[in-house]
Image (cartoon, rainbow over all chains, first blue to last red; front, side, top):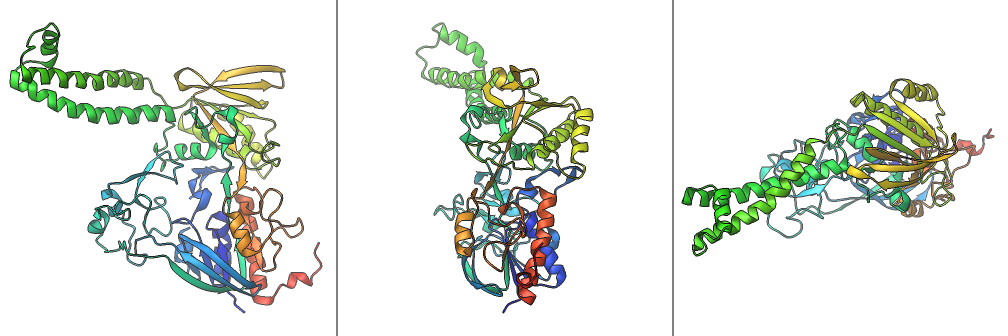
Length: 55
Length: 452
């Protein structure tokens, strides 16, 4: 039995899952195929409906 | 993002892919391939000195090919990890040529051309799939002439043009104008070279080239070998300078794009491609139109759609605000065709369903709100994980357990499961995290519990 968790994909969903688990005290392995995490959301300039910066 | 990079409980394996998955809930054996970056992760400080000196220019995928990067690069400026990566498809050294400029520049000694892919074995109790989506390729809709008309772009490309950290530093320069400006730059370099050659002759004979060439054409100096060479070089110089002047004059009239058209449901709600609604595109277009108006207060936007689906907290208000304060008009109708107009202005042909008229209108730029398509890699990944896909190739879930896949211990969140916007992805991500922790720590308690 292992208590570690694997997250596949480092976009906004993968990042949120990883942080939630890490804050719970769980060891997370986050695998991302691109050189940096961020995914599609990092490509966005602002987000609706508040026009906040995406990154 | 930064928090992920420095959280002691997160083991970040970027630039890596899943090779093999074995086992079951509570005990999965995972093989991960850590692809060679040719840069040592523990040494690279992310300073970027290497990419300043790298001689190889490559289209920048992060900017959707609208900008350029070097063969050694960081995915984007604030990327985590900040470790740079060498693109082995373009790097001169890795292609067997002589270079190694980055290795000489790097003060940390992080460049390692001998680096190989590494295999990492993990044992985990549960898996969360957050593999995301791909943007629908509008080339599949020939009547919209994407890639044929330069000023027809996708919403994500437009996003990069709007971004202050994007290829235009946030100026709404049209792709056709940028192409001409790039050509001017290339011709100016050529012209400067040929100007030098011509200047040598001018000095030698103490005469301006224009004067000399006028006389030469009248038949003077025909027997002089040196002057014949001069005439030839000057003629060549003119073939560069003359079109350059024409282009420069044209470029003087270039302004930022002011008249924007947004076309909704490109690939979605279309039975040829995806019958479903992608959900976020209506709001995405309104947001882009509002931001464009913030960049230039005289910008006007027309959003063409069957209906505007502003479903969510504060969304309808956002839509109305866009109409009242950001020069957005909403036209109910489906666009039939985009034609190439004068000055590279796309012409949108559409049916105005309120007036029951077929109309056409000229714009500076057209933005296609593309569908949320399943990501290319999902077939291979689903196969490795042993999970099922649905009819549209998103990961299969059921309405009462929206983050559970067909295999116990494997969960899904975000657009890998279905099209959704950022807030919904975040909510699902927290839900999937909770489900995964539940399985890893207690076994799947959900099975025994009554659901809904």
